[in-house]
Structures are given as structure tokens and as C-alpha cells.
Image 1 (cartoon, rainbow, N blue to C red):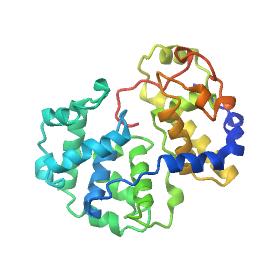
Image 2 (cartoon, rainbow, N blue to C red; image 1 turned 90 degrees about the vertical axis):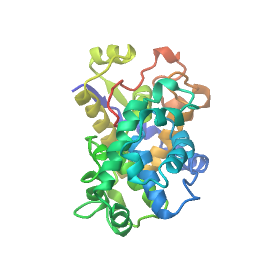
Image 3 (cartoon, rainbow, N blue to C red; image 1 turned 135 degrees about the horizontal axis):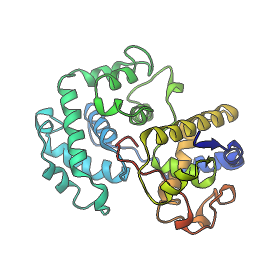
Length: 294
């Protein structure tokens, strides 16, 4: 066991929960791809979720995806199965964090998705016609068994994100929305470690994280599973949804408690946080890893 959960640290936020959710939902609830047909929107969401890793979601959706749409003539797989790395790199040329572009990796992800969609020509119709998430012919089955990049992650973060987006945009209506698992990405991991909702009991791991050394996938998966279980327990206890808690945590992780800049005075978790008012270099960060899962 490398980590232990501190439920009390998470439970402390419940008094402010509804106000925080309302506030951050309003600030972070922009509809996506409103100017395209539903079929194209489904494809845009598949590609966006599939290649999203360690990158600003708004930039990816509002900038890159429209360039990719134009290049591929509405996501014609004939154009995307052979897309060149230089094209992807060029379309990200305005992205400010150059080290996060990773054009070779994202190019291969695009090609992989295109190949899988090429052999599953009725994918869009299957998605639109499904009435459930789990089980045979459910959305999870449709996506994970057909598109490789969605099935690589043991926790299927990308698939659960795609499901939530489809539901939020009313692309699908399902009878088992409760089957969506918590979305544990690098923002969430960083927030849970810094606040102390999760404690690292392995001092070697603490040292490696502070030095930004890569961890083994099994160590990171253990952390992500523990966070997911903690989220589910909180939601059961207080009749909340994982999407509601993720909305609050994501906003804070993306906009306030960033890896290099932590604005503690602006943070509503200030009084519920083990790292409150420390220097950023003294705070834990998310584990460093080379997989494209989260």
C-alpha cells in the first residue's frame, strides 16, 4: 500500500458544495461544437477525447479540432489514416506550451482512431441509437471494443468523459448514467495529493514525485483507483454525482491550483488543504508518466 485515503479532508467541503458547483458549472459550461451537425459533433468529440492528454481542453476543442475538421473534410478517414506529423505540429503552432504538443504521439492517436472508425463505418449510428452505457451494445461496449486508444487506460477515463459529454449534449439518453466512473486525470490527482485527501505513505514515492521522476503505471493506477473510490464514497454519502464533484475539482485544478502556480488566496479549499499557503515548490504534484491516459 503506497497511499491512504483521508475521507475527512474531503467531507469538509460539503457545506460549500452546492454554491461551488453552481458557480463553477456556470463558468465552465460552454457548449461545444454548436455550429456543426450532430454526426460531425460525435466525431469531433471522439477525436478530442481520444487525443486529449496533458493539454488544455478548451484550446484543443476550440482551435485544433476545427483545423482537423477542415483538413479532413469533415473527418473523412481517408485523410486521417495517413495524416502527417508535420500537419499536426503546424496546427498546434499557436499552442503556448510547446513541450506539451507531443505531435508524434497525437498523430499516431489520430491515425489509430481513423483506422478503427474506417473498419466500424456505422459507429455514429450505433452511438446515437444506444440507450445504455454498460452491457452488450451499451456505449462502453461500442467504444472500448472498437477504438483502441479508449481501451488502453485501466480506468477508461476517456470513455467515461466521452459518455458524460454525449449525455450533457443530449446526443444520447441512457437509463444507467450512474455507471459513469469518476474521471481521474492529472489535475484531480494533483489536487487530491495537495489537499491531503490522499496521503502518500511511501516516502520513496514522495521523493520521486517531488523530483518529477516517472512512476510505474501500477503505482499511478493504484492512486487513481483510490481517488475514484473516494469520490464514489463521498457521492453516496451526500447524494451527489461524480460529475458534480469533478466539476468543482477540475475548475480548481485547472485554474487555481496549477502545477507551477497555486493561488491559495483564491481557492475555496484553502481551509481544507494540507498545502495551504506553502510555496509551490514545496507542494506535491501529479505523478509523472509517459502514458496518454489522463
